[in-house]
Image 1 (cartoon, rainbow, N blue to C red):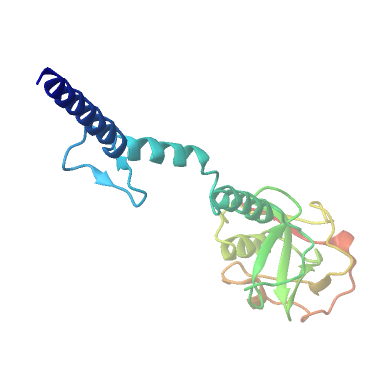
Image 2: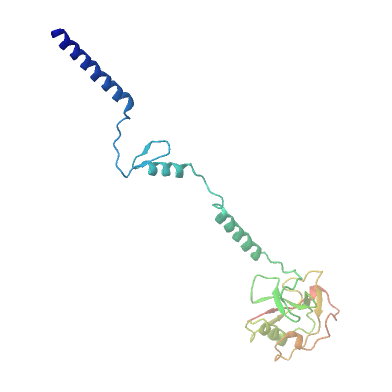
Length: 206
C-alpha cells in the first residue's frame, strides 16, 4: 500500500514538472500592453513614443531638399539685375522707347545739367552750339521737365563731346522761348551742320 502511494506521488510530481516545462516553452514572453497599442506586420508591438522617436531621427537624416537654394539664387539674380540698371553709357545710341525729337542729358551724373542729346531716325545725336543761347536752353529744360526760368546755355562741349559714332542732328537752333520742344524751333534741318563734337551744346537747368 505505501509503495503504491509513493509511486502515485512520484507520477504526480513528474506530471506537474512537465506541465511547467511545456508552459515555459510554449507561452510568449509577457509584455505589458494596452488594447490601443498597434501590432506591426512582424508580430511585434509598437509601444507609445516609438513613432515620435523615429520621426525625430528621420528629420535628422533628411538633408537640404531641392529648391532650398532657390531663394538665394533669386536674391543673386535680383542683385545682378540691379547692377545692370546701374550700368549706363552716355554714348549709347540705342533709342529704346524714345521718339523723334526727344531729349536727354548726358556727360554728367547730374539730373539738371549736361550735354544735350536729341533722338532722331533711330539713334541719339547731339546739337551744335552755333547760335545756341538762353532761349534755346529754356526750351530744352522745359521739354525735359526741369526748371527753365533761369536756364543757361553752355557750348564748346563743356560736358564732354559726344561719341564720334553719334550724329550731330541740329545746327543753328534759334528758339523764341515759347516752343515746347527743341525740334519746333528754327534750325538748318536734320543732319545739316558744319560742326564737330567739340562744339556740342549743353544746358544748366535752373
